[in-house]
Image (cartoon, rainbow, N blue to C red; front, side, top):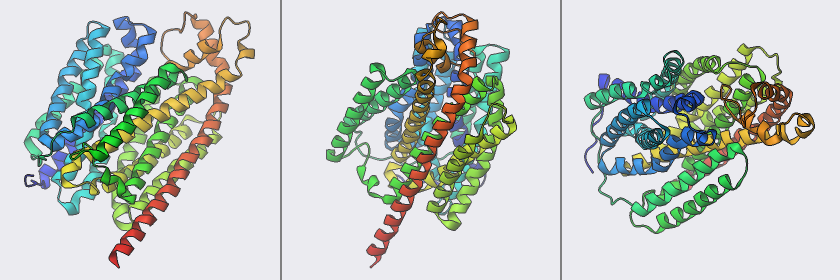
Length: 507
């Protein structure tokens, strides 16, 4: 284990910029793909059935690779592997832009997902490693603030380029920004210590199978509960169980299970899972509300997210400062409470609610998540042994991605199911069945017609869905409120248990 080199002054500021940009671009790139998938599908001429796979492939490979990225960062140096991931994003971002057909696009998206895993897993770990102990909590807060602040530009610029020039230009944002990230990293970010532990190959393969099975299955849930979703989820669960069994018996495991003995660690992991479940589900619900019910364009919807994202950057920094004064548990509970309140306020939404009011509530939800994120990251990283910083950071990224996807899928399925459950009477004599109606509501607003339906019948389904979807949104927002409330109870119990254990140990 080498000696840690730490940063200060300009190097500290530029390290925060590089790590924040690297993490933000991952989110931006995935949003660019999702927002422009219908145009990409038209350009590359692939079938509607391939759309979900193309859209989610980078997320799948990111999820499968994230723990391995953390392990390799600990083993070979986090800065080195972060830079390797950034160069991978440059190469495969350019390949995405130049893809002549869907096969090349699939290769590019699969590989860029692996590159993104290194950026997601190691950016937080590098921040934790290169700042002095007394500055780490503040540095992590600034890092998360930078992620939120920088997260506005890549997705907005990419979508604008795609609209004005063409979808290929949207994919150029990631390579350009990643080159800047590499230059800053090589200039200002110091090398990080390397672990001499052996790489647990069986463990990494098992966790990859678990994560890719769960992530793919969850993605498939958005088209309904069926064998295509159930089988990969079951495979993922079984692989996860075998992974835990193996790690408990391995001399040098990829993930040291002893970190889960800490009640504080488990408390913030639970809070993070709840936060991401709510963020994923609420984003789906507000998208349905604004795009399907209110008829807002996807570009206008993206613009509404800008103030929410910028205020979240300030909230993340403020949460770090508050945690040093009142404690991490108090700030986590406050963030979860903000989430719960924002969901309850959504129950008042009607078809004529002012868009400004909707944007304010959206902002409240995202800000609540930002408040949770800062103490969550601080507690998780402070629980990490020196040689496991990359792994623990990867755990945070893995929990976030999995539960965000789960929230999106579960609430998308539930919303469509609530509409189609009573749709048979409305659809009688229209030539449209409930399955086709569900596919229309599950598609993006600017997607081509579904299942051969003409534009008039597609528009009719959407018009009939408005009242039903508003009722479904109210029901689901009420259900979602249970998630942060339950998480508050879990956090309070586990933090109290941690304090009691510390008191007993001091006797």
